[in-house]
View (cartoon, rainbow, N blue to C red):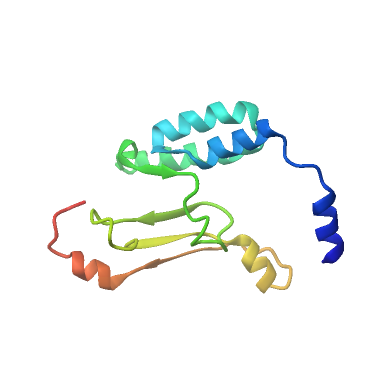
Amino acid sequence: RIEALQEDAAAPPIPAEEVARLEDLLNLSAKSPAALAHLRDLARVMPAIAAATDRMEARLDALAGRGIDVAALDFEASHGRTTLEYYDGFVFSFHAADPALPPVASGGRYDALTSVLGTGRSIPAVGGVIRPGIVADLKGAAPC
């Protein structure tokens, strides 16, 4: 562990141009179609995000195919960075119109966690939680 920390300390800092790109990515907050377009632009200079951008587009297409108005869906690139740390892929949350309430539901993929718990076996996993108390409180409330 000490050796890894020493290697990290000796590594040169991330170039300012790359830091700016990462900040641009992590600050992205927009409706899903606009976010997808911005991610496509970023993928030209950050090719490592191209596959994730393709998966996002496929998800939006699948949702639209089910009659969901994807133009109304918010996207926030930094979502889950502080509250969903064990997720390592797509994460989601559903919110009520009242911003004071916690998410009605949230979840995502956590393949790396299952690899650790599964003693090295790669086990694809997805999970989530629905907060029934909030759902019950919202029953009869105006639609979001």
